[in-house]
Image (tube, rainbow, N blue to C red; front, side, top):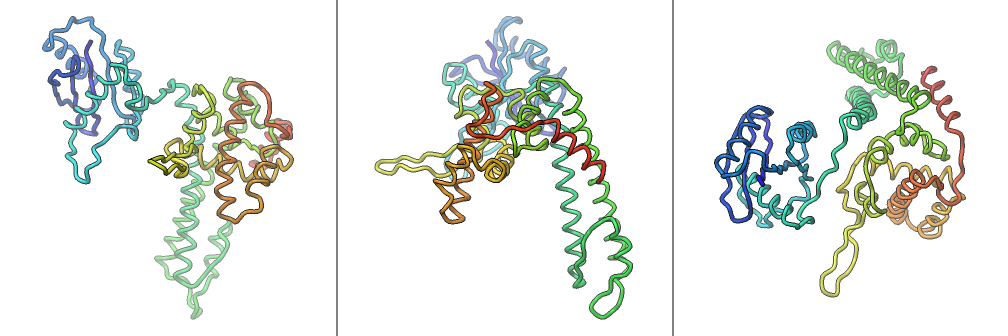
Length: 379
C-alpha cells in the first residue's frame, strides 16, 4: 500500500510518499493543481518504492482553500483520500517550532500512517459533500456576503457624514438629500467627498439589489421545488419562529447531507459543545469550543432568542425561564447558548422522526412563503 500526504500551496504542492512506519519518506515538489503531474509522481513512487502498479493508494490533505475538487479527482483515479480538519492536527507545544511545507508534509504522512494503523482519533476527518450538495450552499453563502457588504457600505456612508457633523437616514432618496446637506458653517459638502458618498451609495444599491434577487430565488425554490432538501426546509418552516433564511441555512449547511450518529455530534459540529477541563481535583467546563460551523452557531443563537419570543409555552422555553430567566444579563447570555444547542438537537430529531419539540406551536409553511414573496415584491 502506498501512502501519500499532500501539502497544498498556491504555487506548488509538496508530496510525501511512504509505505509504512519507520520507512524514510520520499519527498517531491510539483506545480499546484497539475493533476497529470500528480498521477505521474504516484506512479513513479510505486516504482521507486518497489510496489506493484495496481497497489492501493491512500492519500490525505488538509481542508482549506482548495476545497473538495481534489478529493473527487483522486477518487475518480482509484485513490482513497481523506480530507483532514486542520484544527485537529496535533502540533508541538514549544513556543517556537520549525515550520515549512516539507515538515508539514512529513507530519501529515506520519499521522496518516498512524490513522491507517488503527489510531482513528489522531485527527478529525471531514465529511465531503457531493458536487450537487456543495453547489446548493452557494445561494445562502452569497446572500450572507452581499448583506455584509451592504452593511459595510451603509456604515461607511454614515462614518463619512459624521466627519462633517452630519447624520441622516440612508434610503433611496439619499442622493437628493445629499444636495441639501450643509455643514456646521452652512457650506455644502466638499465635492470630492460628495462624489465618494454617491459611489458608496451605488455600490450599496447593487449589493441590496443582488441580495433581493437571491431572496426571491430562494423563496421560489421553497414554493416550487420538491427536492428532499427543500422538503426539509418546508418541515422546519412548519414551526412557529423559524423563517426561510434560518431553515434554508440549517438544511443546506447541516441536515441535508451530513450524517449524525448522536446529539453530541450535532452540538459539536455547530461549535456549541462544552470544553471540559479536568486535572487532579479540578473539574469544570471552559465554555463552548467554537470549533464547528460558525454560520450554524450564530444562526442557532439567533433562533434561540426568537424561540423564547415565538414559542413561550414550549418545554425548552420554560426550561430556560426556570434556569436563567431571573438571572443577570450575563447568565442569560450563557443560558441562550445552552438553549441554542438543545434546540438544534431537537430540530435534528424533528427532521429524523417527525416529532416536533415538546410544546411547540406548528404553522403552515405556505403562509410564510407567500408573506416573504409579497414583502420582497414590495421592497
